[in-house]
Image (cartoon, rainbow, N blue to C red; front, side):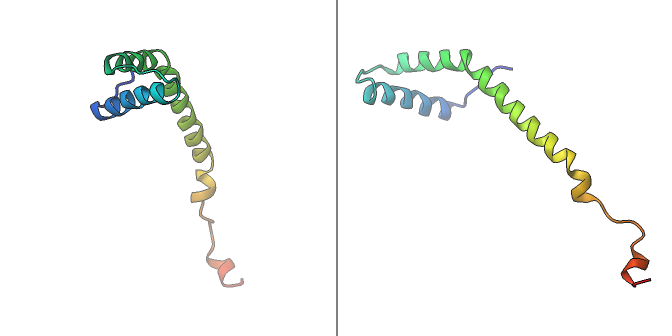
Length: 85
């Protein structure tokens, strides 16, 4: 599955990359260069980040699923014990 960014996310990420280069590297890059760099990172690293996120969600869901019987369990035949008999 490819990682697709919305236009708004792409715009913000491009601006962030350009700002990073300007403030940290003291080098100005244009919007085209920042967009190209973003495309590279999304294609090269994006799937690894996506796969890790899916694995994290799966692990959390499996943990919650393994506890569902504890969370949802109802005691059986509780009528008499409640009356002290």
